[in-house]
Each structure stands twice: as structure tokens, then as C-alpha cells.
Length: 335
Ligand code: SAM
Image (cartoon, rainbow, N blue to C red; front, side, top):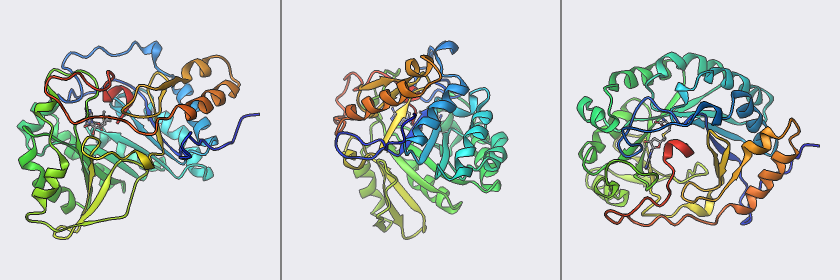
């Protein structure tokens, strides 16, 4: 019989949050994330929609309560809404607390209403600049208007939107207060992220690295930031900005280690389960899925994976010219 035992790692942390990448493809080419000429995976290597549905169901059976779909860009995966509509049965049954996604927003206008109808309540939208030329330089595409329309459509459809912004020394450092004010003015939370050394890109990330400890100090020169107790089971630490009334998060994998409370794992679009964003330890679930209809092998692979979840990652502060800590790109593991 299929197991319903909770997923508990070797350090007693209960894993109840899974990020599932549904594709490695993306309609943007953000400079810190990908190189301009990326080679994407052949389609046969990807988990099919049925396999994605089955592996998500197995996680939920083992006690996962939060499922976040990501990529690459999830909204470019053909049949994405079929998957969401199928997974929404777990929201209806009460087995899942939350089904959500991380998107660049380019196609959100067309997906906002169907997502809301399927029971999605909030989405994270990545946005690094409100300036058209800066956005285009960072993402190598002229899509800012589409993203802004997507955000508006999501809010109109009743979805809560949170903005994720990668803090980049050269490209958006000076613009960060404006971005925060803009997000808070529209009733959205915003989280700043330090660039992480994941996968080779065309530029040296150390030139763009911006310590969020420094950014926080700069913001405190003109705003009052009050620490909040909220944790999302993940890396972000939150403050309330007294002057805007909005919530601001900081994801600081390099200047602050956040692993002690980590209760999440990440599945790539090829079915490789990574227990930590910053480590290579992984277990192949695709083989277990393709071995047959019985979930016994899948459950055994999940049990094995729990024992492999490392206590912490060990990203170090950037050294100019150093190789990435992890060879795979964020678009592979999913953000
Ligand atoms: N396409 C979707 C999006 O744009 O949100 C989902 C995938 S994307 C890889 C997820 C998040 O990871 C985005 O906010 C992106 O900016 C961020 N990201 C990508 N590479 C990163 C890196 N090397 N360091 C920090 N954040 C990164």
C-alpha cells in the first residue's frame, strides 16, 4: 500500500513544501539567470503532465501542504492549466493548503482568471525594474508592459501578488526604494533577493552582487523597518515599512544562512529531486515514476531523499572570477 508517512529528514525537519519546476524553458533571458544562448532540454526528458500530477499527488499523500509551480517559466509549458486544474482537486479535498506559482508575469494576463478559478490564491511575480530600458537590459527582452498588465490582471482576478526582485548592484540598486514604494502602493508585498552563484552565465555575477545587509542599512536612513515574526518555511526574513505600511522581505543566502528552518525540497522538470538549492545532492524520481504504476518505488525514493537532505548549504560570499557554487541554473531547479 502507498505510504502516508510524513517526510522527515535526518535533522528532524518536516518537509511539507515542494517547488516543482514544470519546464526549463523561459520567454526571458535574465542576465544573472541564463546565458543568452541557452540550450534547453529535449522534450522527452521532461516529466509529462501526467507524471507531474502523479509525483505531486505522492508528495501530498506524504504530507506536503504547499505546492509551488515554477520553471523556467511555468506559463510557457504547454498544458500548464490542465495540470493546475487537475491539482486543484487536492485543494478541494483539503489535502493541500496552497497551490501557487512563481512567474515572470509576461503571460499572466491570459492566465490570471483561469488560475483564480482553479483555486490559486496568490502568485509571485519576478520584476527587477520599472524602467523600460533597464528591464530590457536585464531580461534581454522588451516585455515590461506585458508584465505590468499581467500584474494588474492578476489583482483584478482577486489573486494576491508578491513581487520578487533580484538586487543588482549595477542595474537596479538605485531604483530599489522606488520599486518598494510602487509595490506597497499597489498593496503588494515585495521581496529582495541576493544573486546566487547558480549556473554559468555570460557575466561575472560578483560585479552585480549587492549585499542586502547593506541595502537594509541604506533603506533605514529614510524608512523605519520593523522586524516581523513571519517565516514562509523558507529563506525570507520580513519587515514592515512604517512609512508605506507594506511588507518587505530579504532573501540573503550569502550574507545570512537560513537553513535551520528549511522545510522545502525542489523537483526539476526532469524529475530530479534536490534537497537543497545550494547543494548537488539529489534523487531521481523519474526512474521510479517510469518503472511502473505502483508508487512503492516512488515512496522508497522519497524516503531515501529525506536521509540525504543536508543540514545547510555553504554558499560563500562572492569571489571575482570564481566558478558558480552549483553548476545547474536556477531555471533548472526552479526558483
Ligand atoms: N520564470 C519564473 C520567474 O521569473 O519568477 C520562475 C523561475 S525564476 C528561475 C525564479 C526566480 O529566481 C526569479 O525571481 C529570478 O529572478 C530568480 N533567479 C534566477 N537566477 C537567480 C540567481 N542566480 N540568483 C538569485 N535569483 C535568481
